Image (cartoon, rainbow, N blue to C red; front, top):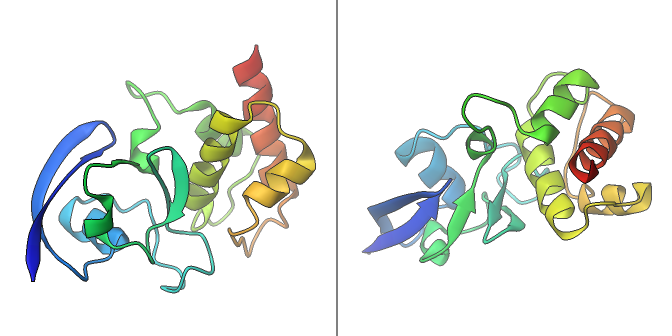
Length: 156
């Protein structure tokens, strides 16, 4: 069964016919050519597919596209503005928070959701917010540092 899905993706209105069982990650990657959200585990366990739905971090690999009717979906591609990296993207780059880069979009989107709710998070709060995101490269120290740097920059 198909339905018309109307939503905003990175501020752009999108209307598309989707099957009821189409996952958001597949809709974003295959239908919208937004490949930042990664298919890591296909079961909601790694966080590589994290996007913001109405400002809240959500795993797009276990979210049906149809469930996003009327919502605002934000992906890593929508974070840069006018060719300039967002504060989090820049902090991850400058503080080596990304190594292989596979988990980075999901980490940044989870951190973005945190910083919107709490612009001055403690290390424990950062760890909690990123707890559903797995990184196999960095050991998390530089990821946490990157979030702290972006938070400090936003407060200035």
